[in-house]
Amino acid sequence: MSELVAALDIGTNSFHLVIAKPVPGGFEVVTREKDVVRLGHGGGDMKQLSEEAIGRGVKSLARMAEIASSHGAEVRAVATSAVREAKNRSEFIKQVRKATGIDIEVISGVEEARLIHLGVLNAIGIHDQSMFVCDIGGGSTEVVVGLDDEVMFARSFKLGAVRLTDRFFAGTTLHPSAIPSCRSFIRSSLSVVAPEVMELGFEAVATSSGTAETIARIILHTRGASEPKSMNRFEFSADEVRSVVTALQSAPTIDERVKLFGLEPNRADIILAGALILEGVVDVFELKSLMFSDYALREGLLLDTLRREGLIEVDDDHDAARRSVQQLADRCDDRPEHSQHVAELAIQLFEQLEEPLNLQPEWRRYLEFASLLANVGVVVSHAKHHLHSYYLIRNSELMGLTDREVEIIAQVARYHRKSVPKTEHTEFSALSSTDQRIVQHLAGILRIAIGLDRTYDARVKTISVKVSTSELLITAKSRGKKNDISLNLYAANERKGLLADVSKRKVKLSEA
Image (cartoon, rainbow, N blue to C red; front, side, top):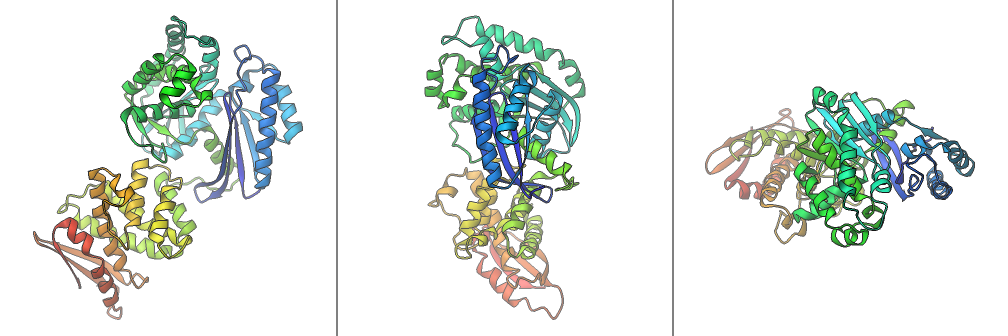
């Protein structure tokens, strides 16, 4: 196979292309394309693909095939409910093959659910808890319960945002009985499997796809929160889902939804049906809260393809966040052994300061990741590389982390040198007071750890800290008597100001 692989998700509402290259344990996205095609629209409950829909689909896939070809990427294409259910699907598949050379795999609903689960698992990064996953597409809704890579339950329902819009909300005005009828239909479909799912049980809940993301963004807007760079792992409650349905009911026309919620017209017309499906899932399976996943079928397809072809090994380390951090470091850090040692020194400091400075256990992970990524900006330029590091971390696809966590890690890395955090800095001032405190404390620790490896050769082996009400005495021990650590102590001493400020103590450094 080519070094690059393209995954093509031929959905009922939209087509998605993702081109990626394999990296240890996963993939790195090269480019993405999306096209709203509405392949399953107007086909009599998707029993037949209309000539117009086939034409739109072939044209879209021809463009995506050209994009894949321009990257030299091998294409694996799968089609879901619209093609799966259409009596004339062979005609569509034949036209696509003739126009593009792409062979389409028509996958079952259960296989679709498995691939969605694989994608979500790698985005959310929860491998040690059983997880309920719901994906609402244009033609179908998939429900999966899995633990790590094992799928314990998978079912596909003929409940999709496009399908139910065509069935219940096809007119320009909202009929009074449309919502109750749609709601009853959804619940009757889902309730069949509820006892089996509830008996299995689950500890975490995730949802994916365009419908889920749109609902999550409406909730974000309702909260008055600023727009994150990534919605991955964004959490919202079941009550907030119900509130979105109520709000959409009060805006029965497409124009009103576009105006009130800032939606694109090709999402505004199907979002009510999609929201009713998610509301039904929440109620039938008694969900309290949900977490949005940036990854879904297409990313699962990528991972599955890379594993099939032996381009990546199945990783025993299931920490998606750590894996994606390491991938970014491997790509961009010119001295990874230095960053690794700095991370070890920083964690030694953290563990000894955790109780006296009231540092929270989860901050340890932020500090370690920021230490590993502090120097990735050198791939752009050594000058101001701390600023470049912030930009690269903030705009990389770090899986298994929330948008807030990525921001904290990026800012700790940004403040590893030069200026300390200041309220006049736009990004820092945008943080909550709690997160500002996290960044200040962790950056203060990181600056000293970096100073203690100023010679870039790991000659400082261990650190011990004595804490009093007025002083932090940090003692560094070298790897041997022949290792002079005076330069390291000098560099750390030059960087101690931030930790002194946040700890409200004098910081002294000495050699053991």
